Structures are given as C-alpha cells and as structure tokens.
Length: 275
Image 1 (cartoon, one colour):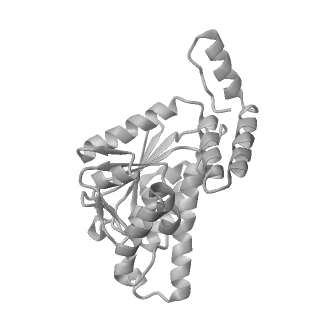
Image 2: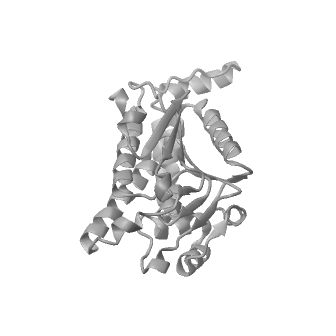
Image 3: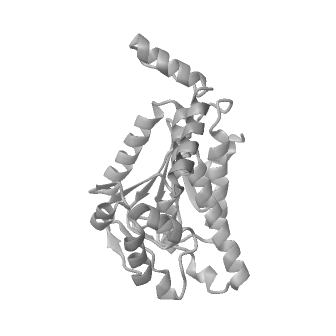
C-alpha cells in the first residue's frame, strides 16, 4: 500500500487525519455545503479503497476505524451536486449514481467500523452517505432528509434501499414521498441516528471514543461480525444463518481467536495481532 494515499495533500475535496488508528475523513467543500460533486465521489472512492487495502495483517491494520464528517460547520453533506446534475443526460446521470453507489458499497464492505458524524445538513446524497456507515452519530444541529422529489428526482445513492432498512418501510416511504426534513431528535426516535450529542466537538469525541473501544478488539473478528450482519440483512432467516455460520467458521482460522480464548481462560488481557 502506498502510504501517500492517506496524505491530505493527495486530495483536493477531502481532508484525512489518521491518529492512533482512527481516520477522520472530512468532506471539505464548504462553499458548496460539501455537495457530492463527481470529483468528491472520485476522491471518496480513492480514500476508501486505500482504507480497504490497509485492512490486512501485512499492512499492520493502520486504520481501525473511520469517522466521516463534513467541513465548514453548516453541513455534513448537503446532497448531490445540483449544478453538475442540471447538465446531465439520463446515461451520465446513471453513471454518476452508480459511481456513488460504488462508494457506499465500499464503505459497507470495509472490515472496520465507520461512523458518520453528522453536524448540520445531511440531505439527499448526504443522508445516503451516512446511511452506508455502520453508525450515525448526530449533533443537535443535524438535519436529515431525502428531498429529491422536490427537484423532480428520486434517491440515487442508496436511499430507497438503506433508509427502509434503518427506519422501516412506512417511515421511509413518508420521508421520501414528502421530502420532509427531520431534526436529530426525530432521527434518534426513528432509529436513523444512534446517538445525539450537544455540539460538534462532543459529537466527534463520542465517535472517536466508540472507535477506540472497538479498536481494542480482534480486528479480523470485528470485520467478520460486520460481514455476517451484512450477509444476513434483508435475507430469509435460513440464508442469514448460513452467512453467520460461515463467518463463525472463518473466525476459527485466525490466530486472534486462539489468543482471545486463551486469554479468557488464563484471566489476562488478550494481545491481538490481527492475524
């Protein structure tokens, strides 16, 4: 893996800060409320591909968790880039949608946890980016919504798939059909957000604390747990159980499983290596 891929100088629309295994990825287009231009999408693909490549024992697991947030103070990500979309035809629009869908699939497949730290607007594509993350933590200033029908559009980056998975079919339909915005308290009530914090600083601190807690666990086991949940989501029970059994079997191939069980029996702290 090329270490320059985590160098902030490698990106023009993102800021990356890797500190003690926690990578904070900030979408940084405050002049456009961090809208997901095609360049942002391309750089998100590059960053998450680099994270994926780092999640091996050979690479030393330099990244144990990711915080995704927005810069500028007003928005997490306000949505897709409307200026760019206004000139797109059907084929180029489909390509744009599929490229961002690819980013969201990368996030879901990462073997490390990803927390969306939402402060300000998470609308349209911004809400869809957050939905692809494992957890959503929100500040009291956060606002969520899928306002695409206001523009004669529909969600294109996964909202029609992941929003029902998070909040249920009925609430998701209502949010998408009405284009209604909801605040952080309502997002928490619906199960869209995991936690609500008073301020941006407390939001980022809480996300970091959770990821540091997870970083102390066996890396491969965390990745397999994420894989198991993804493999079971939306599938019949028997297929979900098969995905879980396969992840359980794979855990028994790791050194960390032997270390974890030995440490438990010997009443000591486990020393996980990621093998």
